[in-house]
Length: 232
Image (tube, rainbow, N blue to C red; front, side, top):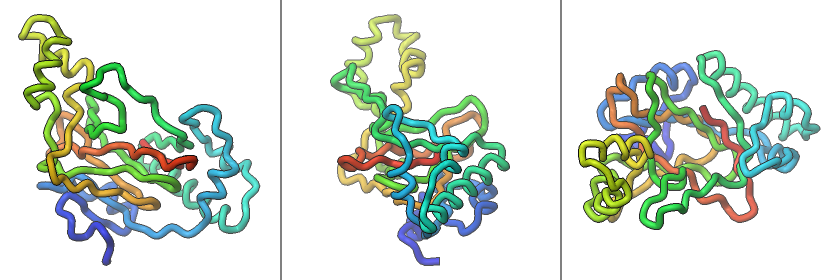
């Protein structure tokens, strides 16, 4: 199966949902892609949904209530099928109509919002699933092309000043405020765009995980264009 991701060690490419959920992460591979070229008009769905706030949760009922053309209906069937497959698997998928995420600009030297490269952490064994049906798609970064921000000396010094407490509590402080989840691309890093339509499974940082968690970030939205994103 030829695709844009097949030559990448970080990414496993599969052709069925069953393979997506049952393939083990191993070695450098911490992202698995159910590669597909989706039919249907997802833009029509986006144009008919109501944005209530910057991130609007779209329910199955909201989707079913839309009056759609044949191509729009085809797109809706795909989304409903993805939601059902993930729910049957035991995940809790949510469909988001996105104008933008909240920005974190409290610290001028360290951003902890989702536009910054980061990993997800969970106390239990789980993975992150996502699919962008419309709009800009997320990026991932090979772990060897990124540096944990808290290990960069000048950033670490600034965080120590911010902490202003006992050295023994510094590492806990970094975890409590999620500073340790964020990464900076190394010079010449080559991010991989996840593109639209594919369903992804990304490795999360948790106690039983055998591989490094997948470093990713939300894209800067295209001007005037909403994203339609399934995530869990």
